Length: 510
Ligand SMILES: [Zn+2]
Image 1 (cartoon, rainbow, N blue to C red):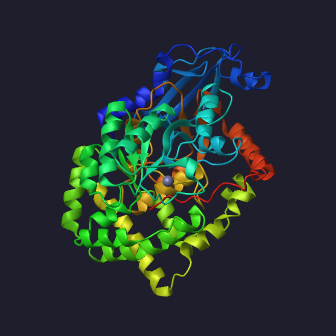
Image 2: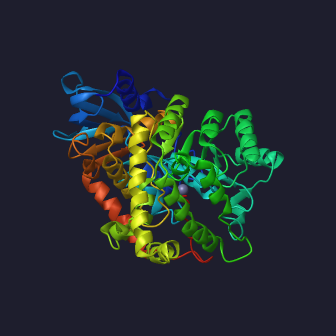
């Protein structure tokens, strides 16, 4: 059962929008074209929408939600909430409302504006955390806020801050900030602040000295920091220092070995040569070497060490984003969907590069390697179960933007994988609703919710059975949602690859 606090949080998510001041006038905004103003006006036209007789998660059965001028003005038991005359009524008997919608805590968006942003809300994802921030994400966020673009709320990282040489150094240099000592680390944090980012992204190859400087400077600048735990830093230190979340299940796997120091030495020996190949080729070479180290860690797993560490993460409030989706797609390549109806929602130039990227990452695996990699994946599921048992806050994130993870759709896959790892359904849902909303401190300034045909508390796969979505106060009923999905598929099919040679292959899970 949800706690009283969560019930209150759910109610706040439903009603909070009503308490805020009026939305800015579309007419006064020079960026709003007449066409866009039309799209905006349907949420400010003075009409009322009544969603009646739905079960609201965290509140109860037979509830009515009133939406007026794009804001949720009231929610309560249907018997106690009269429907105003003139309201457009949607009878949602037998439907389930997820207040606030779903949150995706680990995304990378690098592609067309008329494809990527809309895919999130059309799949019930109303907020995302962008893990490698670029100026275009800020542009999209502004357009979404102005009502010019259908999209999620965006919480945006700065550029990745890494040690030197970074795994991503070279041809992507403008997007990775390499730091070598405390002064350069502090400069990088101030640069993140100046860029308007919401938080600092830390990465694998930072030295402990640079990392500590980032932690301290972030505190001074009032910024959170999150990302990878550096290879050479004990996770307990990162947790004690205040890292908000740890991404993926690589660092935790190394840290729970009885032979941690031996394994970290082996990690330090994995070399990349910054002078050869593209950044992706160097990354692929690094990635292929890491599984041998991880296999050693699996063989020397120490449950006592794991429990002590996880208790500490729980006590410190350090979140973990396991990104099982990307681990699964790289380690259970036998289960990859080589084709899926979801792929039609992305441009062919994006999906078409996935097999090439995957071959580079998985090249040279023998049958024995493959068997071990399957065991490594099973071990990651076990770690998730142990983290959950220890009370560590887990967040659902997929690393979409890497291959075989379609924005919006992939979050539902992550929820299934978290359930496979052994999380009870309610806690799986929490990982994509109240837990990330708290971490991100999402203000209640948007009216969002997700309407499902079946109860997600009885089977988490029911989150895929979407009836409709309320996004930023705009209600996309079943027909409108399907129409907009078709628009995205058409835009994807018409999309041309960027003249600069397309999106650089990106895989950041390690
Ligand atoms: Zn990532």
